[in-house]
Image (tube, rainbow, N blue to C red; front, side, top):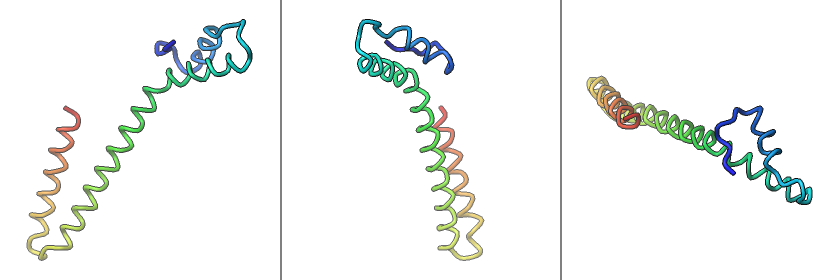
Length: 96
């Protein structure tokens, strides 16, 4: 049973109410854990997506520093602008 319409405090109560009272304690616990896991799966997926995308954007900043160190001093501004535009286009592509 997927319980997605409840808030965090009532997920436990909804899963407990949906458990079979005639089943053994171990089976009830297993059913409750599956129910709670299904209710929290979407929030964990969202957290992982935001965490992974923030790591990618931090890697983009590190790549900009690497490029700035590999060019002559007069070309650093151009290299940084290219990396900034690349990050902006990637952000627009990600959120669209």
